Image (cartoon, rainbow, N blue to C red; front, side, top):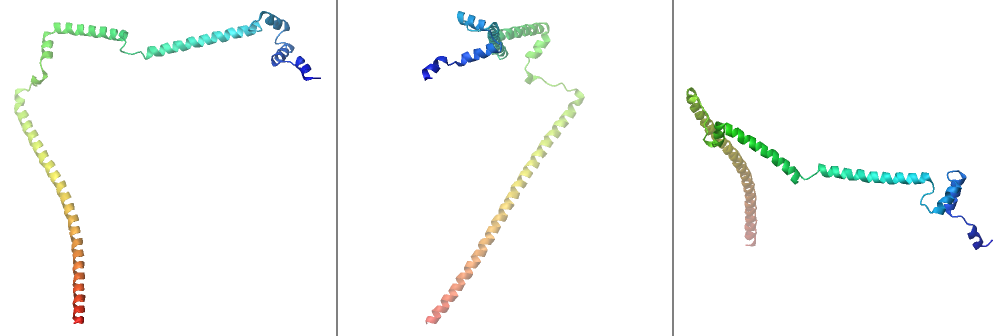
Length: 202
């Protein structure tokens, strides 16, 4: 048989699949014929229902996603938005009006609040004045003694550093003295050797 004869009787994969579905009674031949006659995108009512369910599920997912986005926008809304600021401003205005009413009613409270804090004095009873003076003197003596101890401690630290520096300089001086003695001994030996050589030449 020739190649072109075989191509006439070859079966496409789609036709093979449809024939299997018909043989297993998943589809009926009448449904395939009616679908091919009306050119519908689906073959059976089951497929049509499944397609509708998929579309509805997709729309539901999109709506849920939009709802989540709106919730996130609401949760992370800018606090400087005019809606939030208007509410806060109204609450602040009510609070200020309430404070003004209280200050109008309590004249003494208003005068106390308007008085600068730097000029207020703590009331001390008369029998405690002498004790307060003694406490102030003790405080001044304590501060003076603390300053003396701090300065003495500071001078002790500096003197300790000075002693350490003197020790290092003394060690350096001793090493230089030893080097100088060795050099002077070498010079004397050279003089003696040079003098004996000069005497031998004469």
